Image (tube, rainbow, N blue to C red; front, top):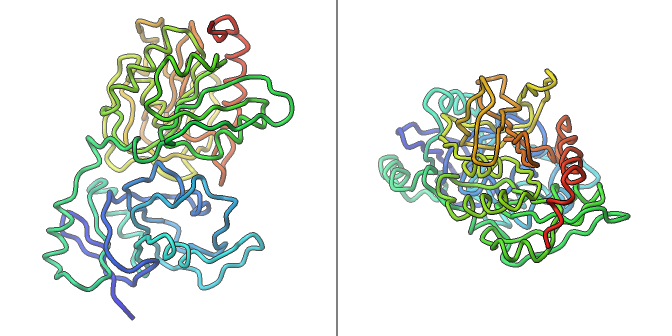
Length: 375
């Protein structure tokens, strides 16, 4: 059996077997704590240029199908598992996981101690990594190649994942609202959730102009998830500030949450190892309710959690915090329709504790109809 190596930029090496395509790949090493939903993880554009380590030991048992994809392709740079399933035992499966990884030329590794890798990343932080299964380089040469790669901090990746042309996802049943979704790496589950609530979604490229947006006369603006460093998105932040001046209701998630926060004047920073998985506890500070939520972010927003804050668009507050480490997970403006959360209310693999946020978006569009009706 061929040998594969997972090589971290601090020099630590794990030996296993090839899983998926044979070759070499590079990215940022991150771990994902969900026990289900590996297909949604693989096809989430937010994982672009990341090598994902699955902490659950048994991966691949439900195979792969065309219905659960969150985008048109697999976006992870590499995939790391401990024990890949030898069978696909689900009636919806159309192929097995390893076959799909090979078909899409995704280099992976199996048979490694993913718990040890996770503990290492928790101690040292997310770092550059390479997977090598082509048997060409020595151990020293592999470490050198990993250290040549770029860092995630400072990376502008929206152009890689955003749609090139706008498209429409129609409402199911009677159309109630029109929403423009700025595609920073949007997942298919998002317009699906809005369609089920009577929203027609116009998905636009990340670099769309205010004029293009206003010509659609939207009732609301959605800022999607996506990969990369939010500090690089100066043009998008400027666009969101223009939208705030138009007083169109805004709902942002994940990367969109960070973009909205920067538009309000706050900074973002790189987390040590990020939040990824479907079991992250978040406190809604307004109600005292704890939600179990799906996360995928390596950056976070720096905003005051102890009081109402001031912005040029009026007062605001932090609405949600992560109970694991106190990271800001939600913000809102108090006198106009704009709010965001750092997690995924549309999580297709679950949990669905936060799906009510789409209904809250509708409430804002109903509350500010005169602001939404741009002429």
